[in-house]
Length: 247
Image (cartoon, rainbow, N blue to C red; front, side, top):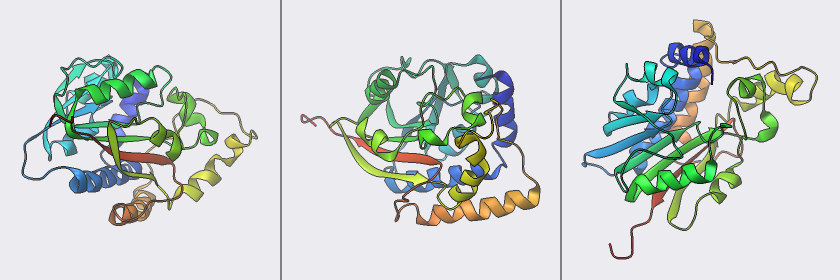
């Protein structure tokens, strides 16, 4: 990912409707599935510019890891970070109670199998893993070229990557209500009428439009723990690592 994209994300993460809506959904899921009254050690794997470090700190002691120096330059302004590859994490076995990996595994430079193996390795038995990835490979657009997307996932594909050492607690598509509008916007590129340009579509909306889109998106926050949406622009999964038999 280019340096200017990290800068663009950093500038928009606090107020952009998409980031704020996703943040609200992540927090709702974490509040439901994380243990209460326990100091938690949390890893943000592939932290990028680091927005998640801020809200994850509500749940415990957080460290972010990313392979990009450009990303870490921004992330260190928001919390504790170290340089590292999600396919070869610089942490001991069973270090973390919670591992969060948001929009990371779809990139061309990520070895999916190795990354998932590493996320499992550093997670304690009984620990919670939250993964979010872009949905539907046919939904690729200029944003995916700009972000070096290798693959966008279906819910079944994400589910199929977990072995029997995990129990899936929740898996659903998100950004359901706004999906039709996103599809209309992307149709010219999806069907080939418009060339994908490799330019990020994450731009600051007008304050009025941003409020409307955020209002619609945040409706999912109140439903996410009760509903599995049939489609959306992203797929999100919460899984718990099983305890060893000896435990």
